[in-house]
Length: 123
Image (tube, rainbow, N blue to C red):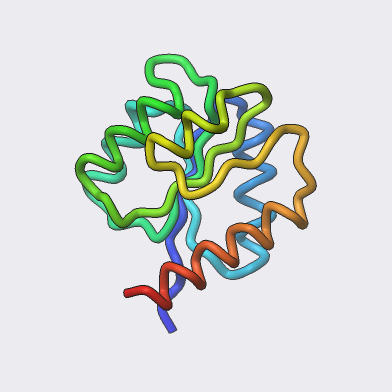
């Protein structure tokens, strides 16, 4: 079975590392970027099974990133990690799910698994 590919976009290096290491344990292929602009470049070259993004980032926030992904890649699931972002607006703009900081890493791993399994079942 092919490894699921996940792109993580977060301006905080410690969060990128935490998420990448936690998800590598589940045998996912992980790419990390530090902002939404870089994420768009990656998504244009590689087909991801899931994008995990922070809400507050320089250059392009998670809301704008979600809107751009939705307009070009409508079936790519997006999980937004936010400390205080507008969850309702994020979901309305196309985010598949949101999780609040500080988050429980096991809850996040489970949420990723559910999103990826659901997306596999609908294809």
